[in-house]
Length: 200
Image (cartoon, rainbow, N blue to C red):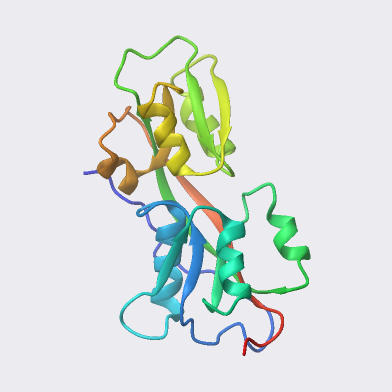
């Protein structure tokens, strides 16, 4: 069993009087047990309105934002490591309300074949620095394939389009792909958004 490495310390940045309003539902992107899912569970445990988490995992963060802007969820959760995070901050329909740090344990999974001397690595958006930490411990060189999310990365490895990818320790245990030795504990900043105008 690989430890999840989840942080027990909560560090928050709250902006405005609505920042600590109870969270009714959370929209984010990713697979079950992904970093987004774990961060959403953490957000719910800290500020959720009720004992049963209401978390929606979408195929993209744009799709997750769409549900927020149409009043289907109350909060949007996005990792600050994404290269397009500024587009959400600049969207006048969204209001940044909070941010928090959450720790996630990452590991490498493989296609099960003998690793190439220069492997093809599918790296989900926002995880290039984490991937580099893990890969440089094992390989002198590697080829990066940028993908949108963990689901696409896992599909590439399973279908032979990539040799490796990185997943959270929780997701790696359930995906059925062989694990490589080593792990990296990443502390990532997550941003929480609410609609800039009250939803009807």
